Length: 344
Image 1: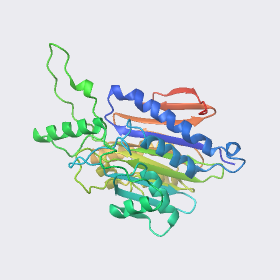
Image 2: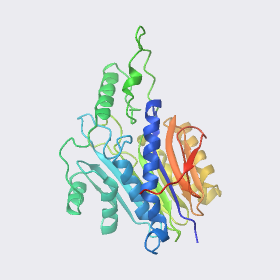
Image 3: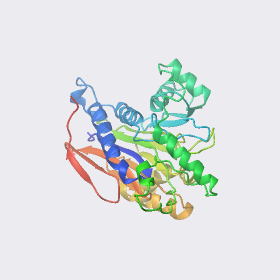
Image 4: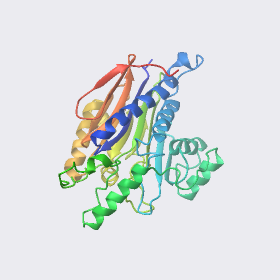
């Protein structure tokens, strides 16, 4: 019987030092809110569910403004939030993909409802909103998902565009206001080039039955045109799950990930080259950046339960639970750990 595993990420990008603590807290909170759903003994003796665990972990991050998903999403040029999500299960290859969703807190849950209806796989815009409202989601007041951080970052983006800077690699990580203010008696240095990467949240889980589920959710990139669609809702780019190969959730510069088809390339490296999940994600993230310039990252659970965590961005927040311990990190190969404590 496979050992249950839950691996999550909180996005890859140019994450400033001031936001690391918030990322870590959010990652650990998401793991604690979802891990029990994978444990049979904690579900009244019934089998744990990878689908329930992935949805719960992503929902937790959608509530947290430290992440660019749900509350805290980036803004388009009109100053509005347009969200995307996808969810896929690896046994029957069912999936639900949502794009251009507004004024609903949990896009990942809307994706699950679409998947479970089994009539269509992909909905966007008003159709996605109608599905959300018809299946129990609350319609929020316009602007309810907009945070001060998102407003500030859009303003920063607009200023950079006004200065003639290339907006292709738009910021997807909230700016650190305090890091933009020069110390007394000094002048501000040049603004560093935004890392060509994207910001998303995602989770991949395997339950005791060997079922693999992957889910991803995002607010996109700051300053995107209204109607822009990224990699997150596209199967094979932002998300994919197949019990015979593994599950992947990606994050990074969406236009780059779409063109490279990152999730499928990682799984193909596992299937056809015999690579481990770690070797596959490292190889394909490097090749993507080498070929197209944009950076990104991914988390992977292989068909045998091995894990892969890789990124070419400056940083990527990630975490997983194993043997009663939470392992988490955000840069390079630095790994932090602490005892796992179940929520009261």
